[in-house]
Image 1 (cartoon, rainbow, N blue to C red):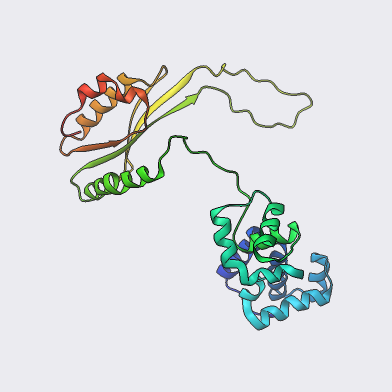
Image 2 (cartoon, one colour):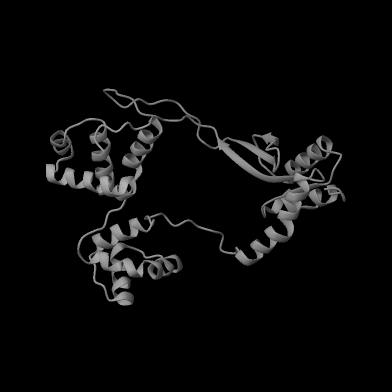
Length: 270
């Protein structure tokens, strides 16, 4: 590995691994390999990483025997290695019922495989499987995934195909509400700096229609409210701007979109 000429692309890739890989030992091994290839001595690398020269040389032997892939593999000592035969079944289990914590995962692993692991060992094992502790996101309580899948397959996808073929316009419609206010940052100062800002009650509203194919946006804006007259104004704007083909709008379930005013404006071509 010593004195090898690394391409700029490979060096960027190694630095990306060093910066973003979830496991610190893998980052350390790759860092040692990169520094050694760039000409640093084993002793200098050991001092920089806070390890022994023997450890650095063990990393380099791994690279010599298996290349970069060998540095990206790291097995935790102890009993966690005994989980390797159960990786597939545990992945299926955790995809179906994600664990709430490393302790919860350790208890479930022991119950299903008989292998006892500490929470810290299990945490490393889950990282090697590609898992990460992520915040749970909400979905509407009335959401029906099966009905949504059917709607996408039977309603949206055929219209997307028609729009791509130039036989229809397809727009996704939604509203955004921007609050007037001052963006507060940080300053080095002796006392806290105060700046005048609006109360936050005044808003700038945008009702937009995004063309699914061209990404063109047609908007209606105001500083009051988005209501059924706003939807009617947007519909009129779309019909006037795109008169040559049928128009399909994908909207959310806002009540003002189902008002009589909006219904009276609808035509066979919209």
